[in-house]
Image (cartoon, rainbow, N blue to C red; front, side, top):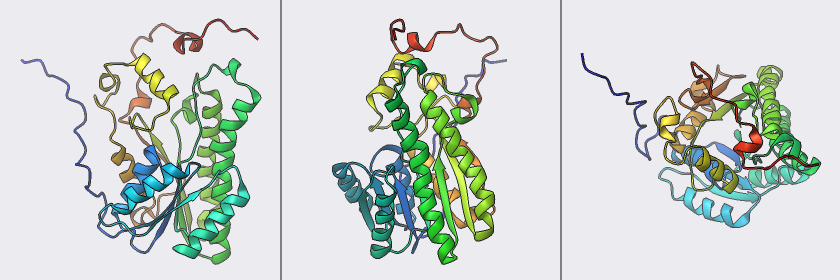
Length: 299
C-alpha cells in the first residue's frame, strides 16, 4: 500500500479556449457593468471570444479605454464600446442603454458585476460606508436590472441576466456585514425576478466566484488575503488551487447562452467547493477586529 498524494482538481483548459461553440454570441449585445477591470473584464473577454458585441460600463474612463482596446483585440470579438457610468444614477443608466442601442443595438445580455466592498468590523461602519456599499452593490444592481427588464418587457423580447454574487449571501460574512447583506439582496433578486419575468422570456441567474486572484484586487482585499495565507492560498482550497478568471467567464457565458434556456432563478457557485468546507474540529475563534489588525473598539 502506498501513500496517495492529493493532487486537487485538474487545471482548466488554456487561456483562449472557449466553453461554447464559436460564434455563440454573434449578433448579440452584452452589457457588463464593472467590465473594465478584474473579474468583470475576464467575463467580458469570454463573451468577446464567442462573438458578442460588448458594452463595458464602469466609473473610471482610463480603465475603460484600456479594457476596450484589449477586448477589441480578442480573437472572434465583435464591436466593443465603453460607457462611464455610476450605477447609483438611474438617469445615467438609461443614457448608457440609449447609447448602446444606438451604437450596437439593444443589449440581449446583462452581467451585473459592478460592486463595492472593503473589510471592516461591523461596529466601525459609518452610515456613509454602509450606504456606499449597499447603494452600489444592491441598489445599483437593481437599477440596471430594472432598466434592462423594462426595455425587454416593452419590446416583447427575451433576455438573459447574470448577477455576480457572493457565498456569504447564504452564510453571513463576518468582517463584511455591508457587502454580505447587499449580496443576499442580489441573490434574492435572482429568485424573485426569475418567477416574475420568466413568462416574458427573461431569464436571470446568479454566479458566485471563489478565490480568483487578479491584478485589480483592492489593496484591502489583497492585504487581508496576504495576512491570512501568504504562502498557502492553494492549500486552503479543497481544489488545492485557486481559480483562473477565465473559468468564471466560461460559467457566465453558459448561464446566459441558448444552452441554458431552462435554467433561471439559480445561483451557481464556482469556487472548487471552498464555501462548503468545514473542519472536523473548528479552529479557535479569532475576533474580526483582531483578524483585521484593529485595536479595541472606541466609539
